[in-house]
Amino acid sequence: MSKAKKVNNINRKRRVSRRGNNGEELSRAQRLTRRSHRRAILLCSVGAVAIALVAAAVIMFKPEAPISPSNGVRTKYYSYSQVVSAFAQWISGNAILPLEELEPTPTATPIQPDDNPGIYTFVVMALDDGNGNTDVIMVCALDTGKHTLNIVNVPRDTCVNISGGIRKANAIYAKRSGETDETRAQRVLGRDFRNLIGYEPDFYIVVSLQAFKELVDAVGGIDFYVPRNMNYDDPAQNLSIHITKGQHHLNGKDALGVVRFRQGNNNTGYASGDIGRIEMQQAFLKEASAQILAKKNAISLTKIIDLFLKYVKSASSGNGYGSLTTNNYSWLAAELFKIDGENVTFSMLPGNTGASINGDSYVTIYVSEWVEMIAEKLGHTVTADQLSILTRNGSGSLYVTDGKWIGTSSWGSGGGSSSSSTPRPSPSPTPTPDNTPSTSPSPTPTDDHPDYASPTPSAPSDDDPPIPEHPEYPTDPTPEAPATPDAEPAQPDPEPTDNGGFN
Image 1 (tube, rainbow, N blue to C red):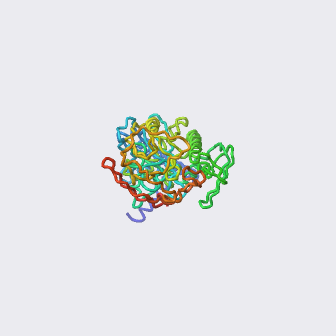
Image 2: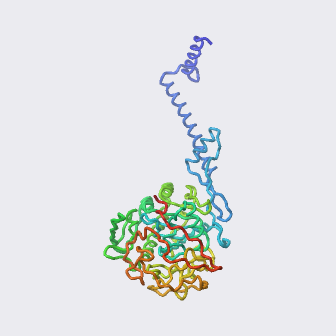
Image 3: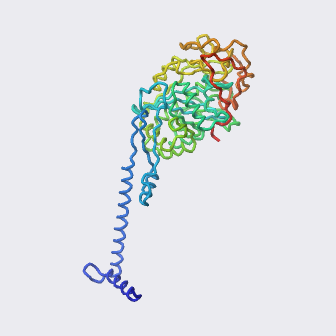
């Protein structure tokens, strides 16, 4: 086609576009109006198609409700960005569903079959400021059928069956030499907490101090009545707590001060030490959970999940002891938000809070009462011999409920059973004579660990600063006792060496 013909065709199209439906010549204003109408129709059509695509995405990718943790049902949860990405790839001819799947963490091989499907057991731990100890330990049972949450606090000084010179629950999470995040998670969930509760928890969550502050701020703060004046300064930790008695709207910083406070300046504080702090933490968490659940529709779950991904460490026994995913947190948050505030309960592990071992304060577990609490609060039926708990028998001697010591079985021998209350002995059978601690002279506190020396070795002290407790964990000062054939000690752990994974 010649150039002249092309020009004539263009001019003909222009003349046609300048005429109306009846062939009349249109003015310039009329032409501009018609052009605007066409553009508006085109934009509306594109918008309608986009809305239809988004609606289809919501319908096609609607999350499926988990049925129970025992049948391995996979549950899908997708973010808006994932949906948009999926449709973009679909339009370009690529895969339609490049989306992650959430698999609810099932109860991982309990000692006996789980007769309560839908119950998830998890552990929440809160780190102190830098040495790897967890001064807050809570074993939680989430019942997704009844929409209840039972929380059992484990005092940080609870005597547990681990190796080392200090055998307290707050040392469980601290990383041992040579451990990776996965092998530590396998030990924490698959051995140490299994020994404590009789079956393996589904997952754990470890919260840093910064995470706690950010989470309280993210929900808009908490209204709380502080029952006493709290004044404590520790320049070594850059910690300063100054909160007056009375009603407060606590932001993250002040809320952290309330739950951390144990002993104030001039030796003022809770008469019961860490137990008083646990009671305060329970009161705060109960009030906080009620307020958060009451305004859950106004809280941004996306922001909460982002904070967890940024500040929280986790591991699940259902995915090879790896971390929880974004979708795992989405599912957990959705399940927790189905709970009413009155269906959240708090309890404390039963034990003698005035026990003393090697001159240091401990909490020794009342085994029979603990077995009952596991059934009532955690929803699992276990027996004493399914636990591996280091505690005292009726005569005051240390023993392990299943006879299997981790580390040296002579640890704590002659350490005394001084207490502020009379211990209730467990009905569990006492161990074999070779596993019963010997009656060798008790070492002085400095022989075991100087940081744990009490002013009076026969009684616990409330005068030590609340955090940190001990930067290192020494090896046992006493030689290992020979094992009996029916109760061979387990291999000891390497000693903790770092800050628990928060670098």
